[in-house]
Structures are given as C-alpha cells and as structure tokens.
Amino acid sequence: MEADLLQNPTSTSLLNTATTTTTQSTSLLRGCLGSLDGACIEKLLLHCASALESNDVTLAQQVMWVLNNIASLVGDPNQRLTAWFLRALISRASKVCPTPTSINDNNFDGSSTIIQRRLMTVTELAGYVDLIPWHRFGFCASNSLIFKAIQGFNKVHILDFSITHCMQWPTLIDALAKRPKGPPSLRISVSSIRPPVPPLVNVSIEEVGLRLANFARFRDVPFEFNVIESKDFMTSFDFESLMNITYQEDEALVINCQNWIRYLSDEDYRNNIGTNDVPLRDAFLDIIKGLDPCLVIVVDEDSDLNGPSLASRITSCFNYLWIPFDALETFLPKESRQRIEFESDIGHKIENIISYEGGQRIERLESGIKLSQRIRSNGFSSVPFCEETVKEVKGLLDEHASGWGMKREEDMLVLTWKGHNSVFATAWVPSPCGSFVD
Image 1 (tube, rainbow, N blue to C red):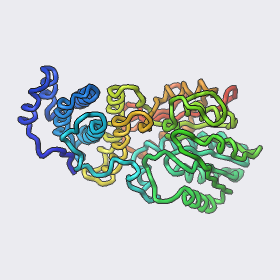
Image 2: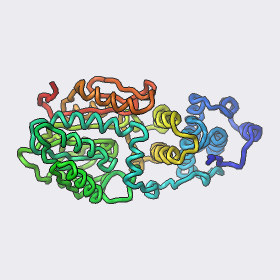
Image 3: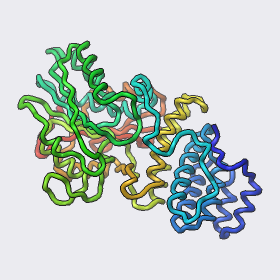
Image 4: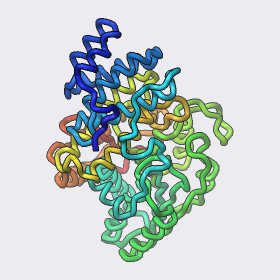
C-alpha cells in the first residue's frame, strides 16, 4: 500500500513548483528530491514545520510534495517513517493553516482517531508484545527485581500501572509457583481506565483479570485481582481511590509503572488531595511514596519527546522512532500486515507528537535521565540491578535479532538497538531506605 498522496507527481513538476520559493528553499527541495538519506529527510521535515509555524502555506505544500515523492508505507524504513511524518504534518496543516492544503491522506490505511484503532484479541496481543523486545525488556527486568524484593514475604500486592493489559504477569506467576518454600498469595490491582493508546484489546479489564486468575489457579498460586475505579486519566487521576485501597500489614507492596507516567500531565494541576499546584506526575509520585512500597519499578521509552517547540519534537522523534522501523525490517517482509499494523501504532504516536498541542498532545515522554531526576527529587532512592537480573535480560535478548543489546547508565538498564537507546528500566524505594539488593 503506497503513501501516494498525489497523482504520480514528477520531479519536473515538483521543481517547477519550487521556483516560487526563496533561493535557499529551492536549493533544499531540489537537493533532496528522491533522496532516502535520513539527514536530508529530517531537514525537509524541519523546513515544512518552519513553514507551518509561519503560516507559509505555499512553501509547506511544496515541501510536502517532495516528502510525498519519498514516502511509502511499504518501502524501506526511511520511506515508511517519512510516510507517517508526512501524515502528521498534513494533520497539523489542516489545523493551523488559514487555507487547506491540496494534499490529502486518503490513501493511508486507518483513521487518525485513536479510538477507531483496531482491537486485538489476547492472542494477537501476545504476538504484538513478542514482536520486538520493546515491552518484554521491561517485563523481564521488572519481574526479576520483584521476585528478589518479595523474598521472605507470604503476601504480595502489586499496583500495576501499565498499558499492556497485564501481559507482564503470567511469567511472574510462573516464577512464584516454583519458589522453593511455596508461592506467596498474590494480589494485583489495576486502574479501571488507561491511556487511550495502543495496544487495545477486545476484552474488558475484568476479563483479563479472570484469565490471570485461571492461570494462577493452574499454577497453584493464591491470587486476587482488583480494579481501582478511576476518573478521567489525563486531568484528574483518582488519587483518593489510590489512597483508599486496603493494604494488609504483612503484605509486600510493589508499584509497577510501565509506559505510564508520560501520560500524566506535566503541567501544574491542583490535585484532589489538598496540596499546592504541582504537575500531575509529581503528585502521583508523592502519593505512591506515601504508600511506603518495598519497590517501585519505572520503565519507559528513552527519549525526550516533550519539547516546547515543534522543531525540537520533530528532531527528537525522527531520530528515535526510526528504531522500531529499522528493527522490523530485519525479519518481516515489506508488505507484512503484522508489520504495517505495528508501524501504524507508532505512526499514531508520531501524529500526536507533531500534530497536536495543549491537552490534546498526550505523548509527553521524558528521557530516562530526566524522569530519574524527577523521581529522585520526589524523595526516592534508586535501586541498582543485580547481576542475576542482567543475565536474565541478556537471555531474553538472545531470542531476538542481533542488533538488540543492553547497557547500564548510572542505575538504569537500557535496551539498545545498534547502540542507540530505546527503552530504560529503573527501580526505586522511598528515601531514606536501604536497598534489598546484595
């Protein structure tokens, strides 16, 4: 499926159109025609963004025409990534330009509205998670640390804040079933609502809990599943419900945050617990610190996609999100439906980062270093990953393409693709507190 948003534009017509631009713009457009070089594509994207921000509709259209000549949803990774950036710029142009662009995106597969994204079965979700180690890296690192943190406890309570519908927990349940002195009783509590982002499934969170309970019963692990009734996720996370969860005195409390904190607002917010105006993510960290957990896990993508300017977000996004496009190229055919659907989910992330501002832009990712600084300033101390965890993660990566690797940065474990950071994992305890890691 091609991303041909125009009717077969020729290089000649593109260059003729470009004659109305400045000398610098004309040179850039002519030099990049047909180029698949990432640096040149990035320059074109920034040139288009600059034109949109200055309401230069003519120039924006001209750059889009050139990008369209490069873009293809079934091309090489640069072409496929360009197609989704072009879609995002077209979407932004439709919002900010006084007159509509003549380019349309009717040939794209899928709606720009996230609610209309496909719903997966649980089986399809498992295949989605296994495709590349984007999620499994965090699952593996987290579960290894959790298993070590709860040694000696007969009761464990996990507050799970994640976007992958509890796909992390069968592996932990299986490990607990094999504990030499027998498994602890396990409670998992999840929020009733989640960020409106992929992956989306065709079953309710209650049904997910029933499936987990059946698996735990099969493995002879005492199990309880709770759903925390919550309000609107983005603006008024239900702190009172979080605070009112019943905790048992002899429980080991673990808080698991996987690809979650980025969706909490980072702007000042008067929360519903009586404190001063603070960013919602800081209020969230303050609440979970007050719960006195024995371990807090935070895993997310390692890039700063929350810059105030459109240009900074384009640069960060383009130089980060090439990773999954490049990784999928190593083992899936260009026209693979599974590949196109996975890239489509990334494409909708790109559209939100580039096309939207204010409260509509929910993709506000902080880098591992920035988020770690935030967590530390909210009264937590980091927990280093032990060699046993490192070994387990390396074993997981051996199941995937050779381009995947792992490194340590301060107290973070970082998943890499061809040496570039992709996902980080961190562990924390409220300060002052000693580490349980030997």
